[in-house]
Image (tube, rainbow over the protein chains, first blue to last red):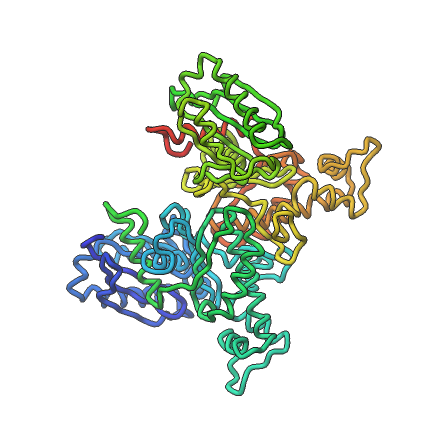
Length: 316
Length: 316
């Protein structure tokens, strides 16, 4: 572990969070601003600069040796740019250069948010001790990241592990990404709710028609609600099995709002995984809930920054 | 490059080939036996021993520093065992131990045959110079392997890259592997021929009802034959796009008998790839025919053996 500290940024469509983090992953200083997601690119960047500006007022800032950024994707780590779907003012936005400029030239590591959460789960969560893992976030969208051979596998552009946009239904419904039958199109929270509503499920008196409400209905015995989670579980299982068959992972970690549904999701997911993960070398694959919480993006970005430092331990 | 030599074994359901190979991938000595695939395990092993015995009579054998084995799968490199689908006498057969015993204790590297062909294409073929590549064999079955970060990615058990058995049609036809809608179920040679026959294509006077005959008919303008290759191309494209989206590859290399169909396959394959590979970081993905020939399995097994030697260049 390092005695050095690092800074971390977690950039999403709703908030921009920053922190100073130590070599154990403990967050020592925090700052946060809402993302002005509908504004022009410079306005969004000013929010990032305010977060960094607040961090630099801490006496600990002087010990930060690098900055890790986990950003909503797509990102391009090779070019140092980001184009988050939900932040239209940023298209090929040179985030790495801009962050480096306002932070005194510290080295900057950029990864996608799915990769960042994977780094956090591998460092401190359910994937700890696993050399080959898939970590997923199933919520409004479906994202993910990979650990291969004991190390984070961001890929050349920092986007690897995008399991939400692999097709498991090649003749299926069009996905906003332009493809068809993507895992996200079948398994995201809004698509679970849509499936339930289309098949006759109706929200209760509170009008809550989210996947969380569908999960509650499924737990209370509603068969349509249960079937909606079963369909999502089938798609997730096909995607997880495909990943394991392609790169050999031994654990899949599922987080995000839908991941919190518990047995309503995990029971049919484990059953479906047995149907799709059939070859001898993937049969022992397990699937478990994520353990890290809302700080996962910051902790994962810090892990990436620490891994880039000279003398860093492999496997952070 | 090494001045050392290595031995290589390519073990398939039809033949067992062996060679002594130099550090440039040149085959210096060869031996081969038919695979007694329906016999008991010891009989199959005797054929391997005969191949090795013939190689040891060469004066070059004494310079071999390791043995690489590419075997029909599934293999288990961590246990040193193989269970080739088409060789029922070998189930969890301790091939590494048996080969080591008859070769004077040389180090043995075991990989699956798809991984071996990938090593050959990366060393000497169409994937040369690419740090992130998928190489596939599309023939009676569909196999493959991956190069990630400039190195072969066999995975812990030597089976990574098994693209033939990822599901691209989660509600699709059952596959002999136990899953549904696998790439192989839609895109292998026998399945291309079956699709054509089911849709009214009939073989010519020679009675040839193989995928090669369907390809010839497609080239001659038969629309059913062409549609059969288009369906296979669609499944291959969904699988290749999934792989790129998961691990970030920039090239897919397609070999094997179906890969030799030329434009009948590659034109619809490139078109379908644009439909499924939609995210920014996979849009530049190219797909090309394999360049290595029937010795690819031996050359790739040799590459794996060379990569395992002390002082080996990374990336072989």
